[in-house]
Length: 393
Image 1 (cartoon, one colour):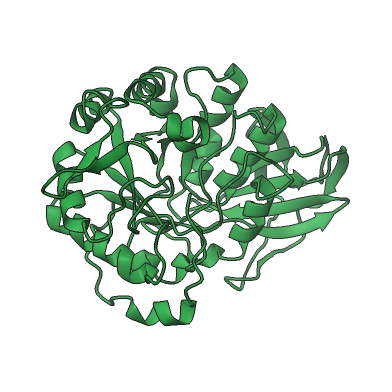
Image 2 (spheres, rainbow, N blue to C red; image 1 turned 180 degrees about the vertical axis):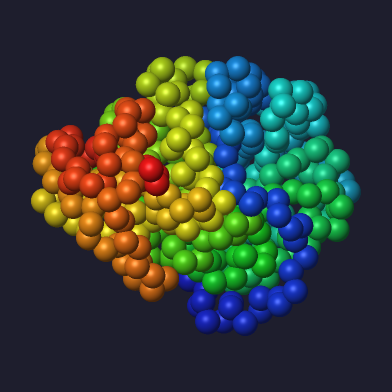
């Protein structure tokens, strides 16, 4: 969540500090976890968070790499006489420290939310002017991850405000992953690598696939800023909607595939306790997650487009490739793809030659599909993908 800012980008960019005071190497790969907003929004409670931590710790997600449980907006109520933030005692009767301890007891990490402005997006107290007090409190509570939004910020500079909290977090002496959430208006990819470990690069994701600001819209927007992605500095495409009511299982699988191909954070946003087995299978697919978590961190680029099917390719650190054949249409389409055509990365000015010596592995079907010696053929359902790994024989 965030509010659009009309502040001119040219006025904001010169204030970025050259020397950053942020902890190094906190996110060598994109963070993985769960955030409360997409499912619970302002209805979030202590009980909700405990249930989600219990589920993540027991359903295979923790073993798959998910580690953060993040409370979004609406946990705060006020400030005390000394200016320290106070949690809503009705929603969080045990307090945030006790809740963080509970999450940690499950072998998970704990995240929380605030805002760079005077108020959060849901009109709770923001951190403007209270950066050190809030950072101190988060450190005392055992917070591992801070999502920092951009509401009630009229007249403020995003690089300045975010740098204030960056420095306050650093002064606590506790490493805390800093998630910048400007929604892309302040072009955080131009300055965010010196301030946080990740930055929201687009407007809020909607629970939609092909309409509005849903999955495909965000994927297209992210593809235009892919060169800013790198270890410890990630373009954040927003939380996953997989498993929520706006997407069916096929769309959820495609959604997850595209996020993995972008090397963007994987922050689930559904109800982990009530999700269908098919959605859990998607979220915990080890080969798909390995593509997202590849240490090279280079997002995919468009290789070819034929018969309504797009071929997106992503180079991986071990010399292999991930390839996603995306059918955007609502109807099925036939794929007949020649592996021998060169794949030229327009941003990095590099051409990859896929010869005949690669094995083709279907990630979602967990099956070998032959080699790149012959064309790959398939019928891909509407809004579905064929997601494969190319590995040297």
